[in-house]
Image (cartoon, rainbow, N blue to C red):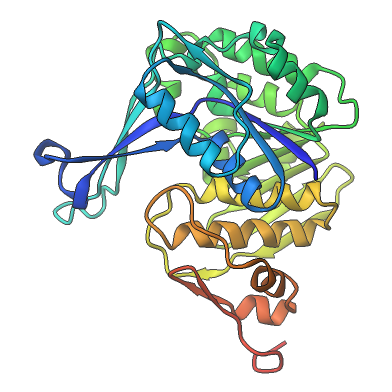
Length: 344
């Protein structure tokens, strides 16, 4: 079973119960959230040996994170407990009917968190070093680059290290609030391009690319990132595109989904796509796995949606192009048209 190691910050997440405005909430639901740990849980659900490496405070939130990840089949031997710094926290502010165009938003309380103290020394932790040594894939994120200079140094060391047969992947994960924060004062966001260009596979949303790299044009993006073997552009509800270093291009249309909430869909796509890569599947099959995993998350509240049973998922992924184009997804159910019932 291939081993994947995801490195980054996971936080406690508080959400007003029943979607009431935050200032009127008497109850807050506690869960966990973090791009890299979301990917780790997705990879575990896809049948991989997945681990999360990060730092949490020696507090109840940190304990909750470790227990939740373990319950989802994710290894936590590389998690460090900080005796002084707290676990990061974020609050989801629900969208309100009185202002439907505003959508939901997020309040971060992560400056000075235990995770922001990740540094090159983290790699010297024997448990972390052991995980890195056996990993077939190491997954990183642009979020970590925004947490602190030490975090950026950690990413740079990993991305510049000899591969020794492993892949290193980088999801840009643009977060405007982080790059505008005081801990990034004076930090040029071009560091994201520099880090991404060191990776083997880069994932970026088309909307993110405009903020992080100043363009959404495929050719310009590939020119800005010439070194990765593959750059995957997530074109929202339209398609996902894999641009290869040799000029090849693969595109798979997105599924038609009855969306409940978009949060977490990008991480689910990453887990689905990367699982396909680790299993040695074609780019088309890997992109399909990404779309299917994202669709499951889009139809639920929360950061992760459960996958269909393995046999049903295999049938969905193996359908013809015409069937794929006709799939409708609602409440986690994939309605796949019968072969011959859709136009080729």
